[in-house]
Amino acid sequence: MAKTPRTWTGARTPSGLKRVRQAQSRHEVLQPRRSAAKTHVAKALAAVAQPAGSTIDPVAALAEALSALDRAAKVGAIHPNAAARRKSRLTLKVNAALGGTAVQSGARVVKTTGKAAAAKAAKVRIAAGKAGKAKGAQTAAGKARAALSKTARAEAAAAKAAAESSTAAATPAKTTAARTTKAAPAAKPAATKKAASVPKPAAKATAKKAAVPKAPAARKAAPKK
Image: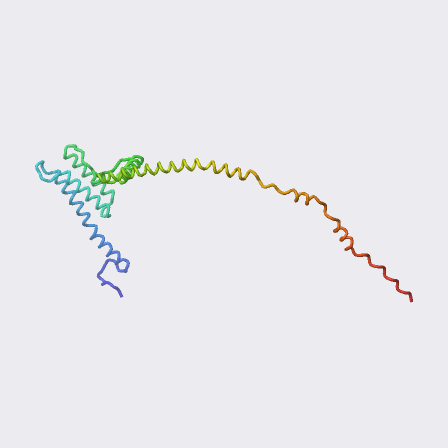
């Protein structure tokens, strides 16, 4: 059974009906952007066409029209190429009406700084920020704290240098004393050498000879029958 009446000539499937709903909601969102862009462009052209004594500033109207076209292109109401084309034509018309005076073609100012220059400027800003933080507030109390910390650091550095010099002077005496103690090794007694040179007794040789078993006696011949 059909979900829609027979007089309906559009989509019938669920997916087709969903596409219809999506197109309708998209149109409700994007159409105001298109209308606003067209309205601002028409206002800019009207400001150019009016006499010089009019209250509408053509430069300000041009800036608003360019911003409206950019917003419409950003949300997808119109194609970005169409927005660029309309901006270019509108800017040319305004320039021609104002007697060739150059007018900014976009609301945003594009930076033309190179990458190396931008990186260098960023390093300078970071260094300046760190220096400002290290200084602290430039008041009487802040200056006093800075002076006190500077003197404390100087005193600590002087004390460290004195301690290092004293330790360097004390280390050679210790090394010479250690060398003298290690230079004279203990002499071994000569009795041990003599005891080692004495030949061993021949008791082991005799014991080995005694341990050798004798050959077994020949068996007696059995008497013949």
